[in-house]
Image 1: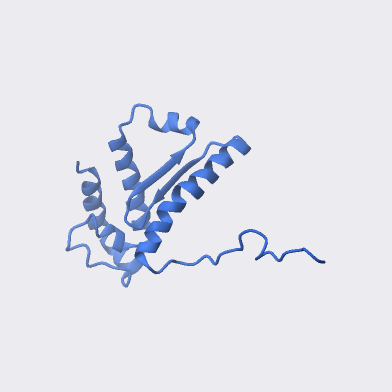
Image 2: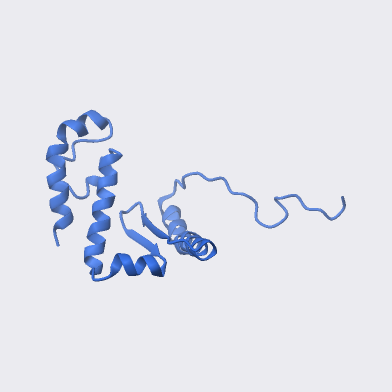
Length: 144
C-alpha cells in the first residue's frame, strides 16, 4: 500500500532496554527520565484509575526520589519532618540491599571490618554475620 509507513518510520521506534554502560550518560538519562517518565506515568495511573500511587526510586548513588499523589502524600507525610521521612526510606533501602545481599550499597553505611563481606560470600556470609551487620546499619541510619 502506497503511503503506509513501517513502525520504525512512523513516530518513535522501540528502543532496546539494556544497561547504559557510560556512567555520565546513565546519570543524565536517569535525571531526564525520572520526572518525564516515572512521575508522569504514576500521575496518569492515579488519575485514570482513581488509584492511590506512591513511587519510591533510589538512584544508583543512593539518592531518594519519590512521587505520591495527594491522597497518599497527606497520609504519609502528616506530622513527619522530611528528615524523618528520608531516614525511613533510607532504612527501607538498606533493608532491601541486605535482603538482596548487595553489600556494595551497604558499604557506604557500615564499618570497614564489615565491608569485607561481598557478593562472593552472598547468602552464607550474610546469614552468619547478620547479627553483626544489622546493629551497625541501624546505628548509621539513625545518625543525624
